[in-house]
Image (cartoon, rainbow, N blue to C red; front, side, top):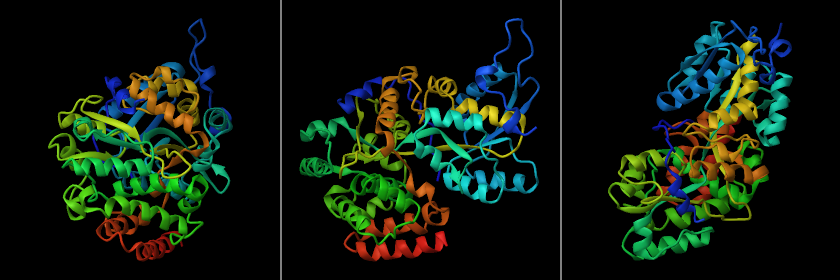
Length: 442
């Protein structure tokens, strides 16, 4: 589920390093490497070809993507139009698909949507030229993520880094605390901060998706990538002992009243980004476990990134250092001449680096040079994604059917809120999670 939040502008965040311490389109699509015009100024391969791209982006996020599209236009001669769908991309695409007039390319905020559209025969399998770029530039996990019944329909082209903990530097200094590297160290740090008179955590538990992000980081590190994949696909039940172990660790935070600002009841009444304001604006708590996009709200609260607001990687609770990504998956919805050429460009090293030069972007493309990012924080986050290699994983709730993983007041969102309310009853919550998962995956 895409979270409706301000676009993060990471330009100028270099100081945050201190925080880390450390006929058919498949036959006719032209490859980007062949699309520059001849020296004599001849026609470009996609001259006159019209391409429509739909995505949820608005504001600065849309502006920056349109710059990428402009670079593609200049290279190929294509005429590309961007359509902003609003937050509910399904409501925008559904009638167009049914009416036989979908956009050439859609960029979906949820891989589950790609699977849904593929099963409705609304997507076109990616052409060999696109698959070549994916094989060269992405780990196999990303190829599998965009595949349905053995065919590749989509690829992640923009990432959000969700394995971070943001903290208020003054609160740590006042308590004499240091950024932790492990889960046990985090608990010790939290107790040190609580003893100093400040609540360690401001949770945004009224926004259920933040609890799924917290659970996913703990689960990936505790259970490991293989179990993470199995649970994501409901190949193991939510009653599995690995889920029990993760919830028991989560209870070490949410079950301790002095660890949560205003206790569990207050956390359940605090949405995102109000929880950020309570840390960096009102200075009532010390930490928020959440993604890179916290930077926007922290800045709006008057904090200086890298000075007042800092980050450390989500602490290891097991053998795996968790790197969980959210992001946007590009798919082709028409057999237009330009659709595959655009997807090939977006998945190429050249396309990725064109986008990476702009603020607020992280690439899952392992061959995008970190040196092209506009600031040191973004460079470091990008290196974290690449260095995670085969263990990096996509947001589990976004992989699930939306009734289970992406609906307010239902499924995982509601039941994790119930767990925050009563963390002593993990077995009951697991049983209910499994009941809801069976309904969603039937």
